[in-house]
Amino acid sequence: MWFRNRIYADAAAATPLSKRSARELVRLLRIYGNAGAIHREGVAAKRELEKARKSIADSIGAHADEILFTASGTEGNNLAIQGVIRPLLQKQKGELHAITCAVEHQSVLEPLRALQREGLVVSEVGVDGEGVVFPNTLSNNIRPDTVFVSLQLVNSEMGAIEPVRELAREIRKIRTLRQAQGDLPLYFHTDASQAPLWVDINVEKLGVDLMTLDAQKVLGPKGVGALYVRRGVPIEALLWGGKQERGLRGGTENVAAAGAFAVALADAKRGVEKRVKNMTAVRDYLWAEIKRLIPDAKYQGPSLMSDIKDGPCLRVANNLNISIPGLEAEMGVVSLDALGISASTRSACTIGADEPSHVIKALGVPLDMAGTAIRLTLLPDATKSQARRIAQALKETADRYRQS
Image 1 (cartoon, rainbow, N blue to C red):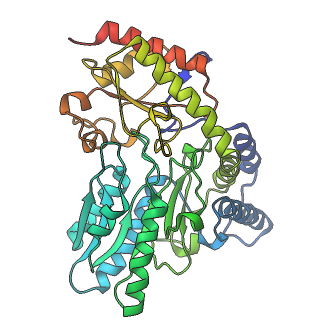
Image 2 (cartoon, helix red, strand yellow):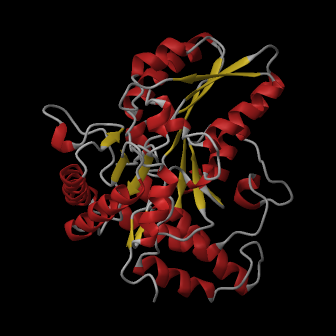
Image 3 (tube, rainbow, N blue to C red):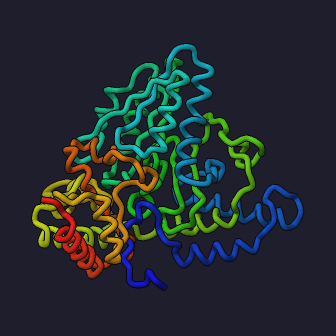
């Protein structure tokens, strides 16, 4: 195969299918009945669908009836945001307020901005130089009319792990006071699409009301995701025309993809600590090699483990976002591709935008440097040998294409 000797370092965009997930996908493709039918083939499909739903619920510490299957993380974010906020806007007289973060994925930012046309007021809170939102920043922005907060668990571009547990704790305090006084509700959503391989996503520990997942980020298939909706959270459909998924997503369920996703997510849950330890060592070695070969290279986002004296590492283990002064990012990615390395400049959903990444700009990176940001996101089985090859390819690219 033409890509046999290539190194894939764009795991934040998509991952290959794991062997177990692929086997489950092939097995379930033979089950052709519609899960909504009452004949034997339909019942068999429904049984597999509900088995997958329960498995995903078990993987995140939820109940099966709290899991809705979607076609992507983007759809999950849209359903969480519009499905909860729009009914509140329709019922409430006067404006309502939502909070998100300046470094969120566009599938969070754009639905919120769209709802501004229907009367929603949106605050996009900033981050510190490492891309992290602090709990007091959130509480200082919550108003009496704030009904929704959406903050990601892991950033796909610069790898920051947001303090979702602490943020949820702040929200619960405010919600408890409101409930006692009969005031407006307050819901907390997190996009955890990038998290399962690297971070604990137990919803009870996180304390969230809604959580988005995406199979293609966890060695599962494309075209399937899930939205966790805590019992009691009111939500309305975006896709009409069928009673599937508790009436919240019309359309025939993709049983094969759901089952393969469930297997991939269960595998992701196992061995997170060991995976993080191994990958952190490889990622930090990669950075050391880059600095050895390109001394003026810089990285964006949270400190690496090798640079931390005290406290936890707030960067996801497989992420390294670097800048090489004078090397335009897209030229760098094209050159790396020719040298057998797959990398990217930003989230795949924003490829084609003329401006530098909104995530990198939000870190306060100067505009001329923001345009040099290259994202390297390693697969769980990446090795130090591969890290050396990536660093050498970056050195060759910099020597050839950087401008003084």
